[in-house]
Amino acid sequence: MSSLVAVVVTFNRLKHLKVAVEALEQQQCDAIVVVDNCSTDGTREWLQERGAEADKLDVIHAPRNLGGAGGFELGYRHALAEYEPDWLVCFDDDAYPLPGAFEAFLSSDLDSIDAAAAAVYFPDGRICEMNRPSLNPFWHWRLFFKTVLGGGRQGFHIEDRSYDSMEPLPIDSTSFVGFFVRREMVEKVGLPEGRLFIYGDDVLYTLMISRAGGRIRFLPWVRFAHDCSTFAVSSKTYAPLWKAYYTYRNGLRVYHTAAGALFWLYAPVKITQWILQVRHYENPRAYLRVMRLAIMDAIRQRYDRPHELVVELCKS
Image (cartoon, rainbow, N blue to C red; front, side, top):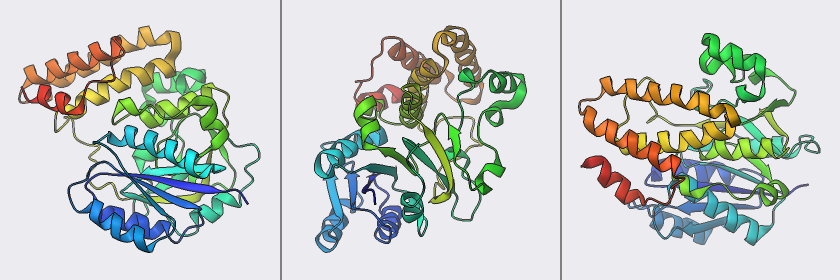
């Protein structure tokens, strides 16, 4: 049977991490790599204690907070060098595989699959929207027109009925919650783009796999839970404001990868939408300054701005 290593990135969510590690210890995998992004809530101490008791737990302490993107890049690099697994699976610290998830994956017919997405649910059983896999509408004209003509996210994300299927479903992109990828595919396309810090790194990476000819499939019988209670889809503003910087800067790179030459027609529309969001902010000048900084950094392909500086710039 294929070997499998899990990569989890954590930062100051010890309560959630404990649930994730406990769930992982009941799964069929060869190692559990946890990347701690310099947590200050007792995570480091707990991981040291747990690591002394659990043979499979392999803890990596990042030199600084690298964000989710940097954490996954570090975790992938370590897992590949240390274990040379056939497969990697990754997710955030507030997610966890449901009982039997890894066994269900490993017992699937994986011969024609290079990467796979699990079905992700909230703990109460509802489908987790932020982890719903999708097709790239710029590669599928029918979906493109469906999206443009008012379909929105529903125009290119997989349907609810797909979650009840027993057949693998081709997709183009997905999130890093319950994402499985072959070692050979990582060697082909490279590691996740850690400089993005947070937001968009998963969509960008899976689009790159698809563009390189990788076959990504949605496997609905492989199930994960995501206790992302802090994620508010109804909010019209970013708080703290630095989140807008990463969303917009990284978003432009993702849109460029997805749209190709059409990006130059699509980007002005998207930027206009962002500008219109200013009406929802109490400090519109600060919002517009952060948005402009994000756009300029995206144009310059600058992804090395330190997070601490981004936070400070968003305060001033």
